[in-house]
Length: 331
Image (cartoon, rainbow, N blue to C red; front, side):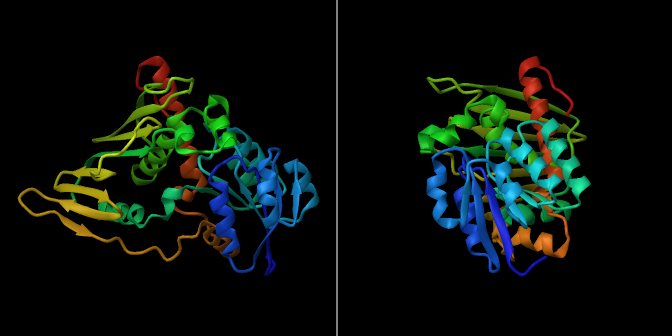
């Protein structure tokens, strides 16, 4: 790989793109050379790039790229990644991996054929507690774990000020995969898949509980069943003001672990709760991490792994099927 890394960005409608552009600007030796998008957002991005395109395929054909950031809607991002991987361009795709598990598998197939790296970026991956909590669970600190609950979200994309292009596809089930279920239960699905593997079944309740305009769903709750373990993941575009209790919470036979403001608290019957600061992450820059994976020929780990994220898509597909059938469904 050359000393200077030429980076392209395909799609600007995923609201997380601006943070990723800033992350790449902080990576020594990386240069943002090209961007492609069909919306007026292209004008906002132009100053950071050497050239701008309306068509991402034209960009892929004309530019020599060493890495591609894919930040379109969940449906389009899957196709963009497949096209780029087929050209042997490593891809960092912003969460979630795809709108459905079929497209996620297409991405895996293209990655495996090409032999280049694919990383699914979850903002959650840059929080130190995520890794320390798993370490403590795996070490048996609270004995056999029998339940985890995790919730994520806010009171709505439009309500918190997301731009119209982001809102447009988030509210489109075909492009997003669902509503709050796809947006925020996806985090919990990836977390549970990494911590505990694939569940036996998924039961989901979702709906438009608070909005006076159409959305696929603004609140969703999924119950994942494992052998002697259950997990509860909640995604919301309806909650205005979260409670201050720990999140996530993990219950084990010998105690409970909860995360509050980045610290992990251990609760044991008859003892005072103990707060601990997780060890700091060596790197919190997703662009730098992805570049290290490319240069060192190593696979993205944890929830950044495309295999973990593809399984999370299967979990969400089962959740959607369950919300229609009223029954628990196998992923």
